[in-house]
Image 1 (tube, rainbow, N blue to C red):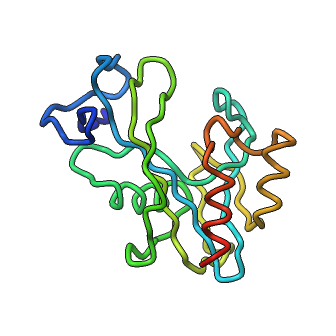
Image 2 (cartoon, rainbow, N blue to C red):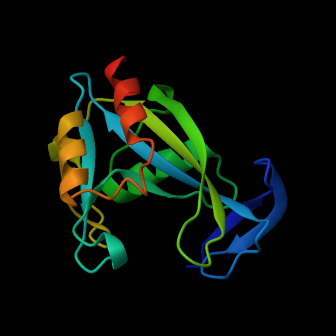
Length: 174
């Protein structure tokens, strides 16, 4: 099924135009991406492992994330991505927007506003249902584990999550 994205201007305002995923975006066009960090009440982070053969992120641990589809706002995209990737239903009330940054995804995908969400929610690891087209494992890890996994190359790089240090401090204070 073809996926369409809303096109935003440099101020983050929808232009009313749509972009077909896979086609090249214009230099002045932006789309919306979300990163979703799920944190439990003891400071654990729910992470997932990408399946082998997934471009540059094969067998890498990461957080939930993806593109907002046409008609979705950032929060709706975050909740949908968590359901699609790990089969859990996030309570929108538990989500807080940590930051918005500009990101430059892979070639042809133009520029993106990347909204980074933090959801404080308890999730039984046994209730996680992995999307077999995307993920092969999930687990709870601590903040120090994430940093060690990034340094060892087991987690997606700081290029993807340049804000990770600030995010971990932010989550520590909750």
